[in-house]
Image (cartoon, rainbow, N blue to C red):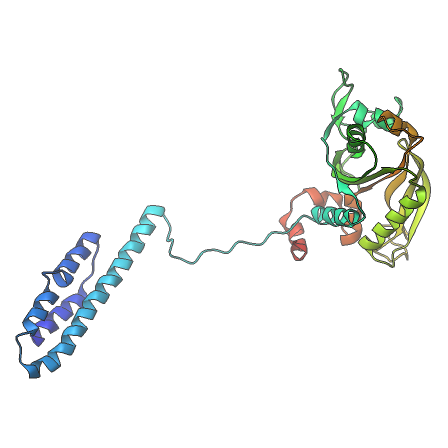
Length: 344
């Protein structure tokens, strides 16, 4: 019997299955209910006690060899079938996914929104395609105002029941819609994309992003506006940042001002970005013109308010020292990878 087992052992070790049918024949021949191993165990019962001590171990090792051979061949054929059906080996380790990052404009927009939400501002949105009333007339733009010229605005349709239809030039149109649809008090910011017909360069683009704010209530003053914006700048750029207001003009606010901050790139000492003045203008602001309130059916004798607006690209320039606005819209992966550490 030991010689027979030795012959079968050599046969098992040299056996290779090229198909499932061949492997199944191997299983039946050696491991089946009427197979060789079953017969050997039946014959084992008839040998003497002395022979059993030796043959028992040999027979068990032979059975384990046959079972291990069968299992190895089975796994090999299953892997081969998987590769044939899918065209690739699904048992290989997977390829890792490269981590992405938020766009720098998205990072700054989120940071601006979070700071202002802490001061009680809600977030409001509106359509990017607007009619003349919401984009211009309700905001106190005279008919002859330069912003109505084709060189500044992307007009989609001239004339019609609602007047000219255009891509919005500012998110102030959202303020009008909000005031028309509700009653004071209002305290909201309006982030979004706006469009102006300008030549694309390192400092200008035909589309960009704004965040505008509006607060309407009784007894709102310019001092409230200054305190809100001062706190905003301290949170965004740091406590050492200096602030100044300069008189300006906007059709929808009176009085109006532009707010400058000390240049964060040169720390106020003067550089190319701030044109060696040490100051950078970041937003326009002012008290809402009474005409705008009346256009939205709000009693200007009872309510006052302030509004402000800033370009997200300008803020992003200061925070990350990005000098070319075109980089924001080119989707260059090398540029975007720089902000992986800022992923949130």
